[in-house]
Image (cartoon, rainbow, N blue to C red; front, side, top):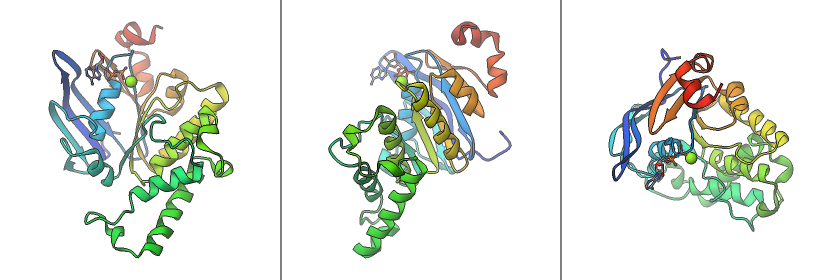
Length: 253
Ligand code: ADP
Ligand code: MG
């Protein structure tokens, strides 16, 4: 995989909170068409790493390149305009709006008139058409065709997680960062999320932070293990699984 050009690369990425290095000199590459899973015990630094890559937290040191551009220190909005999308664990969902309106609003956020946005120059009607087309694609990709008119707050937990992903897809990302998309799901919900992630894999470079080991070995092309802010292994999943240090530190096998 390493011979392919990575879409997103972080080098020696470090985030300190006071005396604590939540992320310490971490290297990560995300390749198109690949799922790079990140596992590790609670407090390992997985969410902090996600927040650094999305621009929600500024790094203390290190570099992040997206499509060849150094994005360390960019705002989340600017990074998102450069087609990196992340999910925010339901916090962005308007619970009293329908599924469709939530996805449409997410699509609209990217098609606002703005000097940065080529679509911003379109007429209002043309912009609305683009918004509707993007929302429709995202709804279908996320498997929510039959839930368009459901009030988001009344949707099941699994559907709300799908909605969160649909809202991210509506911004048309090429890099996707997903923090524990299977958290709290039952067996059936988890299975449909795994199918959704497999559908997304083809057209995205993905980082998947996840605890569900079975899902990881089904989905991941590359697996990184973090402990105490540091990467202790990063390789093909079957190689990582056979690593005795990883077994002792995390997998408990
Ligand atoms: P994970 O997602 O792997 O469970 P986190 O990235 O959430 O781990 O946390 C890594 C470490 O950084 C933990 O010790 C956590 O308490 C600490 N941490 C995370 N965010 C902050 C913050 N904003 N301020 C201070 N410490 C933080
Ligand atoms: Mg976390």
